[in-house]
Length: 473
Image (cartoon, rainbow, N blue to C red; front, side):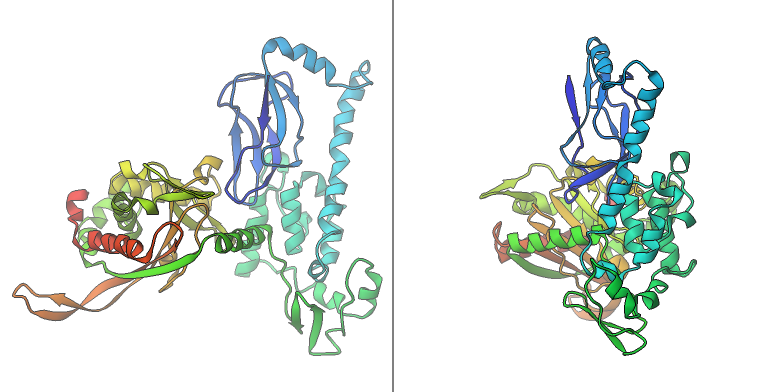
């Protein structure tokens, strides 16, 4: 027999919600066959069975949230199946209908408990966020379709699940359904739920009636500002109080940890991308026709970084206690923005074995599937060096925070046309208009010093400005 545990679903993910079992107790399972579906704040994915056998026991039911590494099922040989199946029903074995009804009762019972746990214990600022809609939504008929992750999202954003249309199996409301609704609120396509409860929370009687909430100061109608708590600060009349989502809290915790662990230092070079542009302009139409996507600067930068890491291997490393693990392969992470709600860092495995075209294809594929939340857990874990592509959002200079346990992260900032000094064939100089951008790198001072970091960046710059990229393609 073998225990099936919840796998690591990302470096900052500590738990996941079982949303669907593809097999039942007694079913035969093939190795690498999808066994269950799990949802986290970063990814929804199907998890394959690590071994072949018979599913003997399911310990985590659909809707249960379990920590990473917890045993959620047991798979064994067919010889073990009958004993396990017989042992599964407790005392009421004779009447079959009772055995069938019991799981329903077991599954239904935890639901209200989870709802209470999600609503009652939040810190004081959460009571200012729309408490009424969440409480109203909890007892609704749709409650049985809500996983803890979905309940947490609708609670944090004050959304009534009754207005959502579920796209999951059997009409289940998925995390994507909630996130799509939040996007519509942000774009103005649907009305935001937050402003509605704020006037209701303002009158003096409500704070007194809420036993678990801290007393709110003067009502909004009576004073221009309302003191909420020391943590929340001052909320002006008409302001909306938005609770931090779990992904924002986890990101903050991971970044604070990284700043505390690594002595961050910062180095920048300015790169003239005229040489890259010369190749891009020649091939961009044929490239788009052949590949179906555009050839971006990021692909060239990634290729140059992979080559430069060969010359400066201590940047392609991770820290393990008092040891620096210098890797002989490059697993290149590319940070992808999820519509401003968070970041995923899918990884290009063994990037040192791939040329520009292959790297460009993987960047496009991983980015597209990351934004659609279609990545598997192993595609967003690990990594030996990370690129943060902030230039696509227009930033000029970004000091990114190191993705632990790596020792460096490089930000590609906006590439803009500006005057530069160029060397003429006769040895003279002139002014020309070229595409120019910064490459900014945060690095861990434990792993190396400034001269080493600068040498790496200068080599990346040199490769971008002088390599025959046409020959590369």
